[in-house]
Length: 79
Image 1 (cartoon, rainbow, N blue to C red):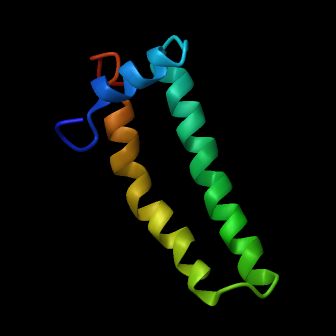
Image 2: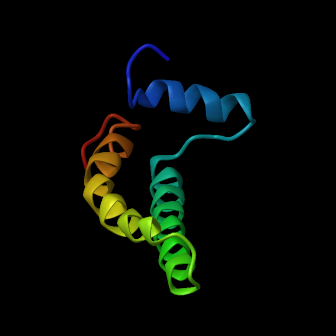
């Protein structure tokens, strides 16, 4: 990877694993992964794990729009 958030690099990595890249699929995967990280951190805090994990939710929501903008570039057509 030569630059951060290089969607062509992501595409090459996925193809290397035998996955056909489709922007919609990546968007769903990213959304669900971010939701999972956020939900897991909230549950961990509720169960008494590190209170620092309470910062994960706001961070996820802060970075979500930028990540989704990058995902939207995969097929070269702005949604």
